[in-house]
Image (cartoon, rainbow, N blue to C red; front, side, top):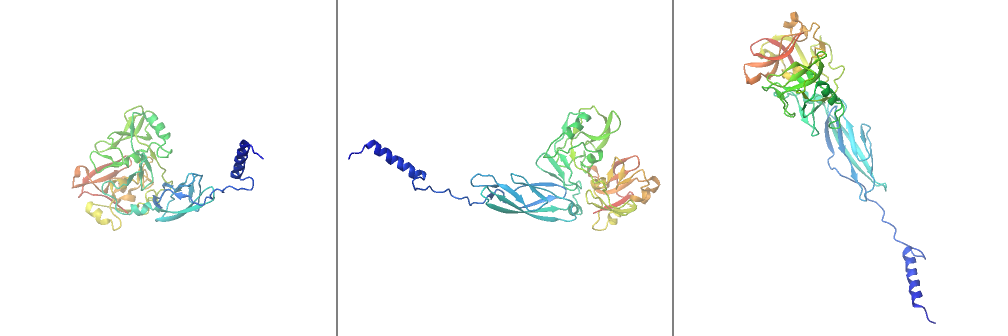
Length: 387
């Protein structure tokens, strides 16, 4: 019998296709099972954050097959989003606290990997109770995102100032600013601006973390319908009343909220704590020369820097340690001030401008005025100490 060669070839090809497709009793090789766990992209596992500040940690992982990775964490203080960014806000602490959080990354085949992350929350008070640099008594850190943080208070400042806005435009600019993931910006108060001044230099300037534009800066405090308080970083510094429609003033925004009940105790207490900065104050209620003042501050207390002393003063309302200056505050700081209400010079450890070794910078406070100046070290002034 003869076979048709075309039909024979066609039948053989059809049979081969059946075998390859798994039909006709054949079978295909099953896919290789996914047994590889996700791999975390960051090796660092220990982070430090100052109390009151927020922290974002890259806890992302990759799947070897490019699939979706799901994330979870085992501590309620932390949250993690769908791309593996772990977020944490450090609450106020009385001493350093360490948290350990386990992040789990799971791929689509339910393979899991776990990473332990250590976060150390730093107590501002521990830093503040050591002797601060004589240069300014402040600690600022550039966050690298256009903002500078005061590590004692947690307040954020705009690093680079801008010019060419009227007061109304400056307020609107800060209210609508989004910088460094922060949207709660505002114009600073007059005293908040004062506390940025590095008073040891002449002319005065900003801390080195900021752009040093020697000019006038807007505050949020109005004088009347046409003028507003501003602060000038020129010469020896100082605040001035300027017209709201000026367009040559600089704008530097701030973000932060002061505690409502900021100071412990009342003005009859000789020792008070500033809950904003954790600085503790020892009110001596006496006067003396500079050497007397230094001897009066028993370790661990010391004379405050000018900026530290300025930190307990507010312009609006005019107050010291939270006590209204219009009250009889003489006994709060200096027994020699009783007749005049709260007032006269208060010693600091900050040197006077132009390095006059015979003088030191003092803070002068009355019901009508808050200002800085320099007096001879053999003169008499009020004494307060800090730690």
